[in-house]
Length: 366
Image (cartoon, rainbow, N blue to C red; front, top):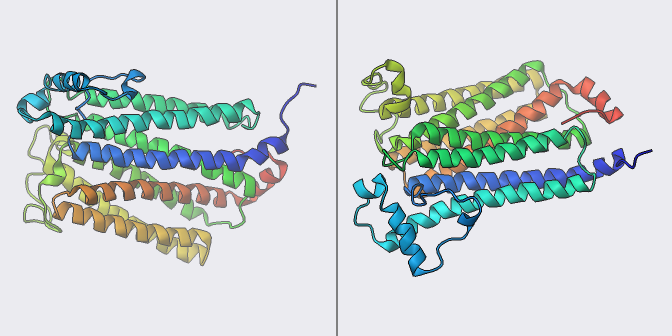
């Protein structure tokens, strides 16, 4: 018979694999925050070339710094906005972008090397292998999308395209969600599900998760247009609850992507919708599931949403101070993490009878 790893051998490695995936997820959260800082400090165009390998080494001499600075001086952002910038000022924005790219490379290594080790030891279950490969390929795609975003600001613009920035941010969050989902599935695979949940809560968990992803995309548009820098009052915008000028540009649908008033208004309205949805989700879970794990999670999510909304309002009213804006981005990523955990566990709890039988046979996948 061929020498294949036993089921007990792979099962015993699942906690270590889960810990590794959660560590990678934490690195992605850090990456999202650093990316936010890169945008808020207008640092994203300071490195004008994409060198996946050589680019890990920053300038090490005065000559190399001047060479890098000279490349930056050729692009529209310098010529139209930062003309006359000193080398020391350039270094300040360079280091943010360099840190963002370095962290991206580090995440790739932190994912790939342990995956190879677990795989070589025969500790990766067959059903998990394509998922890990898929996650790695998504990481590579994210790097390419990042350069695609930067390239949009190097020729005819003084900043990156808000469409590409929103795509880059949303893809990062989808990768985060996929990793957390997989890690959470490994826990369910090993320990099973003991608390059944009403079927209605599953759809609400999916709906809440979808709203968070849409809101993150809208936040990317907001950041790409610097739309948080205008209309810095709350609850009114431009002196009204529903401001005029929402459909100023033509065709009308372009306003949702290019009109700063409309983009900020949409982000606010989605925030209100998420608060209401989170409250209803908690109420439904409490009424249908009573004092259970699903209702507890729904209650915690509602509290998390309120905290996030307060931080968002303060960020706008105070005209986007750096640390507060980064806190808003951090809590958005953590809220997504929590929403994924809630959805993953609720899906399993809704499948509880069948799932328990499969776990006993050792056949369930995460």
